[in-house]
Length: 183
Image (cartoon, rainbow, N blue to C red; front, side, top):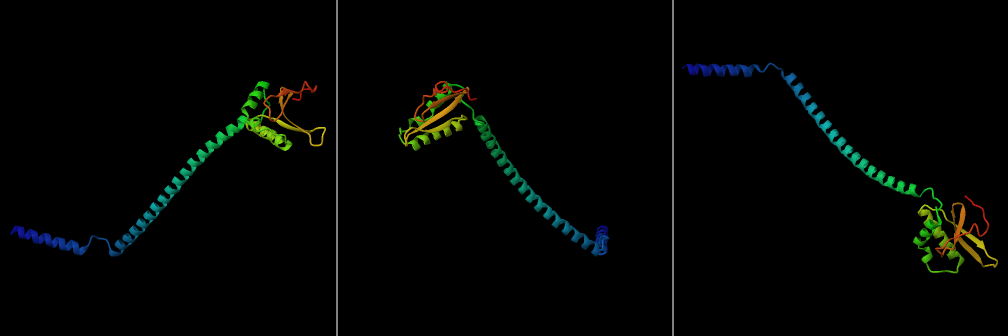
């Protein structure tokens, strides 16, 4: 019997608790639920912004890495240019002869056409510049109307060294023509 009274009493207590509620009005509960939904929406928005920012940051990092790779390549190119620029005069006749032997222009088919010979001289000049050296190409008229003298010229220690575009044998010309040192 005690057990029955205990069950009945417990049931009545539960009914009274449910009937009285938890002490919070329905309006307050609804306000809290609405605020909770707003906060959840803001949280989703912030998460989306975070994801977008992380994506942009990742893109920026990849761009920065590409820029660093490109910068290193450009630094390498600049170092190569600095080795050749500004172009210099040959330091000795041996250096000039060695360079001429390595240059392939003298191995091209021989020509008697002045324009072709001059183009060979210009090619030697361009090749020398690419290797950081100064060579001039000289074009002088001969005594006859269609006669031309085309000569490549380098300065070594203030003296002029000359050779034909189809030759690898420069000669020291300053003393031959009684020419003072030029540099």
